[in-house]
Length: 202
Image (cartoon, rainbow, N blue to C red; front, side, top):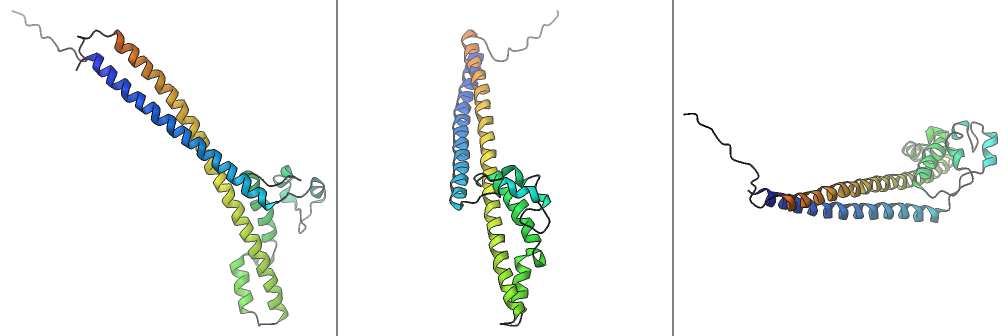
């Protein structure tokens, strides 16, 4: 095969790969934008706000604000919950803490089983029914917030993957340009692999 033909074929293949990478990058960036906007819009509709800054000045175990919340939850004090990172903090460092302080550590399955086993109409049954509802609401909200966080992580991964695709497309485009440039400088008669010549001595 002639060297010029090989360079042209390799460069053409590289050009196709550039197009593929650009399209992939564009789709990944669109996916990242869609994920972030969806998370933001859905969380905004819930109108959840972090406790105000003043609430963290008197953190005590067993109250709305515990000392364990200060390192993470306090950084969003007074803000509306709008991002996946905020959702993760609110779910794991605020709701989960309050659930763990409930009887039976707030585990819905355990509370529900205890409520069904209690004598109907008894004070214990009423107390467990209230606990069951609170646990269900808290566990459900926590799960939904963690889903929003997971979706935002997928969006972040898509964003960086899109950046990588564009960088690779740029590098490949440079190589393709060099390939076509080299093909123009190669004589039409030059072969890709010159045949070995064996010199025989007489």
